[in-house]
Length: 113
Length: 115
Image (cartoon, rainbow over all chains, first blue to last red; front, side, top):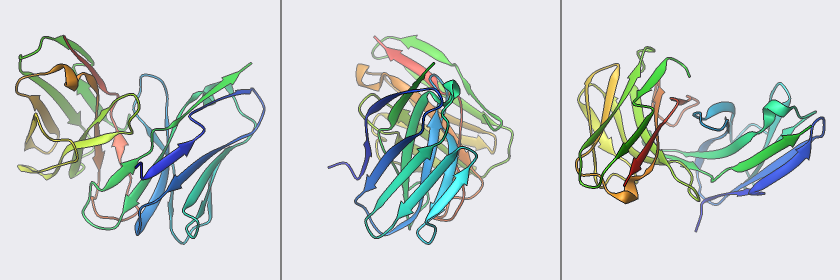
């Protein structure tokens, strides 16, 4: 069973529209939850990192929310741009030894003109 | 890509041959990681290093070995490549490795095809 589930798998939106990507995790306890953006052919780049005590964190047009009670996180993208076309990966980090990251499979977002 | 280079960027090899991938960083970060990324899977940790000559296994370490003789270089070796090791390999670095608010920075990746 996947411990970090992302939905939808893929999404197509028009430029300028908003969208929300979802992440549910089943593992606990956790240290922090991260969102990464991965452009095609490149490595992931961090967008946000939130601890369990943080409900929301923004990075420009990207806003991540976290509900530690329901174990859900979302990434909201405002006024999408063509350059937002990428995969967005949710990553859970547990307490304990370093290297303990669990990556979701990602949501592939395509922004069309 | 945060001062991280990987070489080669692309490689095609045959089953049974040895392959070494190199990760080089200019950030002087203590921790280095090797991941593989496959369709239908999230990134999975192969091995990581917490200092020169200090390494440990990750989730999918079978068939792989690593070495770190200098802070800046982390090598991943496939002793005898198999088709199941066809993947995109990413190196990552972090300043610290504990369950704290520290970030991992990823390299550009190496696409390996084993025929």
